[in-house]
Image 1: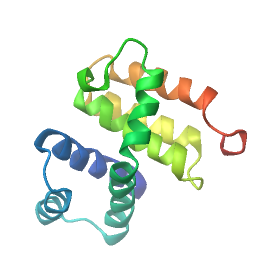
Image 2 (image 1 turned 180 degrees about the vertical axis):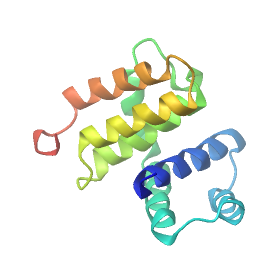
Image 3 (image 1 turned 90 degrees about the horizontal axis):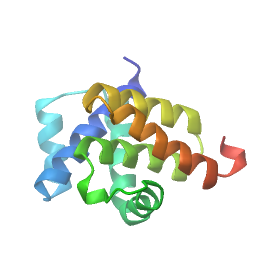
Image 4 (image 1 turned 60 degrees about the horizontal axis):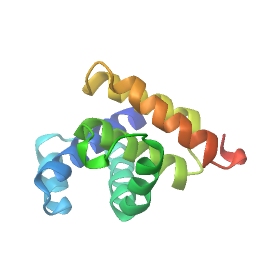
Length: 139
């Protein structure tokens, strides 16, 4: 598995735990790395994703709400919601990551960790956002 793919999966696990338990992200991260040791570059990119999502959570969730027709973010599957949060952080704030890479990685994670419809749902929402919100230079 590629290092950034591994980092995204680690970020998903961490955001899932944070979303469920609603307590100190630093403690969740510390416990996770203790139980799941990884190479430093995997940890570093994971930390960038986690901190970026949490710092920009209001803006990211607003974007998801805007484009997830007939869905309240609170009612979405925890996996789907957090997969989209990671991808949107990359799309909106990390110009070094191509949009198509972020979307493809998100769809793959949704298919791997979500239910049978997760991949299509995540792809649909992210594709709408890509077509309307993302600057042409990043596509």
